[in-house]
Image (cartoon, rainbow, N blue to C red; front, side, top):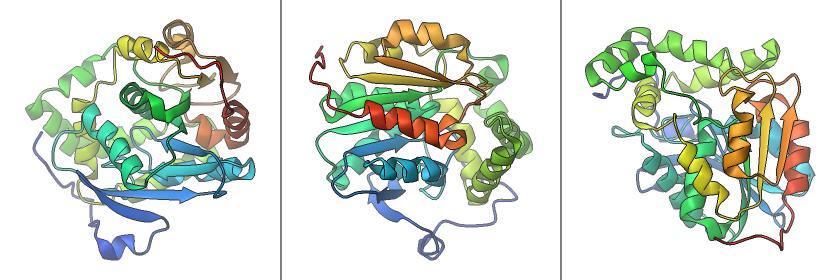
Length: 298
């Protein structure tokens, strides 16, 4: 798909814009990444890997609660999301795994950390764990993408001509329609939409969203779940029982492939459990992020 700027993308990411934002910025091999490293300096580190649309601010409530439970956190915006660079190129899995690897190296993170991935970020986290298993103390997967068949509208996006037309003509409405299914509570849903909408005013945002849908393998990822399940990494699986984006109907399949040490279903919760139910998710993560001397190696 050819790079484009949507008509309502009236801002540009630059040093002046980023100077008004909380957090830090670092130039990695593919561009500038917005990140925030916070919490107790001596706490074990949880790295938070976001999904298809979300900026790092999505993690704020969960991160604050993890800090209160003694954990340090690293949250960051994936390329094309939040206030990280919009890459004029492919948004495939390799890009997002490389970003996480580059960020980990540039910040000289501890040799062992807890990895938390939600939705598409769960796929990124699993792919990263397959590459850097020795650095992952525990893995938490929340409402993972990757088990659905590719629906017809998604198949249409694989065509540059059709995908580009859809993105330019209907992109904003499709994005906000997607966001409307993420959070069960209407008040929290409105907060999420406002947060994402602000970041999507920057040039290249809709391009990045639709290029990701075109390039990133979001469907039929059973083999990735299976490979991750053989790594010997203690894994926690968390799912909202009212998830309308990555339906909990796939719970048994994921459990059989991933072999999680612990599985927890959050009642009356939508797709974005870390945002919608931060206290409960923080309790689950903090209690799971403990030494696992019985960790098995492949």
